[in-house]
Length: 265
Image 1: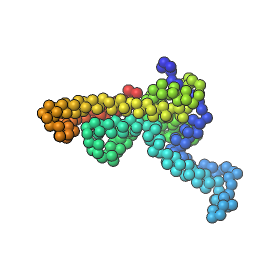
Image 2: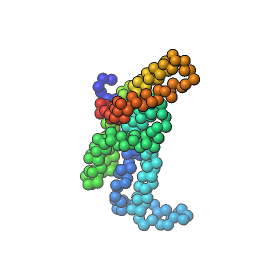
Image 3: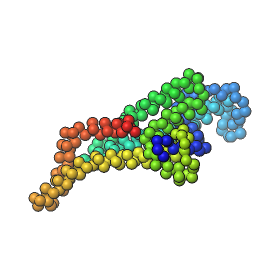
Image 4: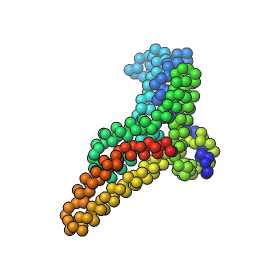
């Protein structure tokens, strides 16, 4: 495929983009439907009072769609940002040391969230500059704002996604070969991005596990040579692994490697 990006246009891409990226536009959309006509009055349903006008119906629909998008926020966070890679690598660090409950899950996920916000800040700034602020200033329509926001998020995911992963989902969807990045369907890009993130996270996990595995093997061999068969090697190796992790400033190295991996992507 060379350096050219895979690309595909699919009708479902627009629907998915509007659903996933519509929260910001819906929150900030003014009640501009006052001059529209033809919105039905809901008096036929028992218990519903007549609406005050098209504006009331418009606000109600916006709130309903906003709540729907907010219910999908965890999926958006996991599938379309750097959160997946970060939280998996941090979990690898915790398990490699041999303390699966330290740090606690709340601290680990909290750290992952803040690192996600930090690593996604260029994309967030781009969405704010090209989509949010022009939309609030009335310079572009809601559809144009959503398209601009989708483009910024798409650029981030394309930089982190392997071409062979995109090719896999293009093949499985029986779609033609893409030609430009803008035509890559979100239904293809999102799962390709997810499995690319999983592969990268596991590659980093292997590198993290190697030094701690060496310590476990050395301690186990030493205990066996001394005939101490009943003493679990993990009990003896844990202090040495903690000492190694502290001496090399493990959290600093882990976070630096994580954030640098997104810059290099």
